[in-house]
Image (cartoon, rainbow, N blue to C red; front, side, top):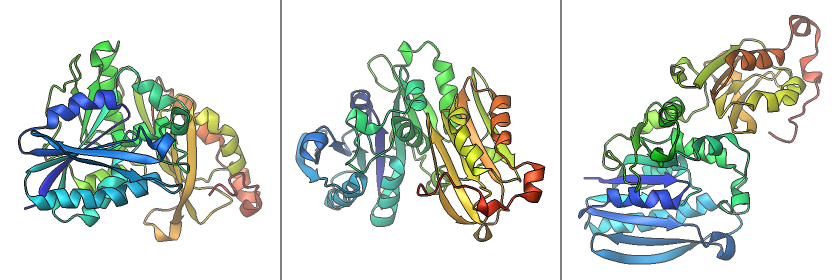
Length: 353
């Protein structure tokens, strides 16, 4: 029988700890990974404990390569050895603040046949959530990057942690002026997730571990890149998600010039776009806060979808008509469709992807 594992992620270790305590019982072993020593010493520290106390501790060295990759590579043998002891019926893995759940879960599913991912729980701060999702601060600027190559921003990490979760714990809910709006925002970002409030001491008011909620196929589908109708949630309390589509390609220069206007008021957007100067490429669109990124997803001929633009955007106080107008203005006009040499257009994204 496979051992169930609960994965705990979140940007704040202070808010994480009461949730971690709520996950522990006599049959549970916890593995906690910290990154406090990463900026100065280049190591991730870890400790293992259960209800009887500390079991062991150590460090993972992180070089100049992908810190997340090195964490996964070092962590898997530790988890495998713990499960092989057969002393516990449940494992809790508390990831370092800058770790996303998705790559870690993918590695667990692919590599550890005796482990079953049971629940992915994400802790978010009700006081800072909108700010964290809306800014452009890099993790490196906060001393939270997982190694030198890590150029992610806080908004990107926060959004991805929420989007892959089965349970979102809303800590500091009692300090928020609009907790229902935050519930609504979390539901728009991930309708799969159950939102659980924490009390003033940070203790969650509902189940956060061994829920049986994790569904690998559903989590991967939601974390995917295609925008679709099933990502839309009813607008309410200032939170709106809109779907923008077009069967015309985007003019690359106009799109590049409009990037700041497009992400203004949008906390998260994802989708696939069609650039006129790259007519055969499916281009991934993603934004979090004030940061937008594009990348190649392959060829349209390899997809069941006809070439088109399809983007889902979520915002607090978002004006759907304004966003639609900005995106529409980036499309090729009817006359440009008929007369332009598309591939001769200047490519402002050359060298980016």
